[in-house]
Image (cartoon, rainbow, N blue to C red; front, side):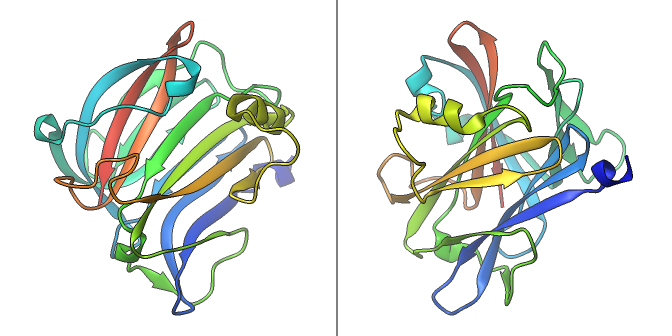
Amino acid sequence: MQAILRQVSSRIYFANSTGTYSRFMWIQEHKPFDLFVGIHGLDTKSSTLICQYSDQKVVGSNNRITRRYNYADAAMVNEPFNHFSFHPDGTFWLKLRRQGEKYVHALKRAQPIAEDTSIFQDFGLLSDLMGKYRCFVQLPKENHIVVGATIDLMMSVRVRISGIRHNIESEVKTDDGITGDLPQNYRHWTGRTLRAIFKFEPIPVGEGAPSHKRPPGTIATFLFPIAQNQWLTKGFHFK
């Protein structure tokens, strides 16, 4: 039993042309079926939750990651951020570093998470220009995922998480219309009770994502099923 309680952590880096690596995010299986996800700042290991966007509903399997952000109507927060967490009973939390009320944005799926649970979380990250991430390291830590960085592009990252025994690769292929092996821009992460597939997609400025009048930093979009073929999205902005 001791082995399954050991934490499994991975860090995701952008590889720079200078031979260094920029911290972007991390994922950690804290305990069985208990997952933490963190986002690094542009200049530091920690980040600040700048603002949160209004909840939106999206419909249709081809539009689950698509939503619009109204920066003018965003609710400003400016609080030090700790991590997102997904717990065995299906509860999702956002944890801040402040004293007192640390956990906010609680949502809960109908069923608890088990080894054979299909994809229970599907979320996306949209980076700033990759060249703006200046929190460098010389060598990545163990269990890392490294993605090549092009300084004048943004990076779209889609993360899908399931139980360890679920055939997540088959579900991702069906969802993305892929036959054969997953392309090289898909990466696997395996914990002890959970597993994930990351999809990395560079995006030119102005194509597929708003690039002007947006605050600097990383946007995170989380999806929660609320009805047949319908999802609630929550959007957050970090720096």
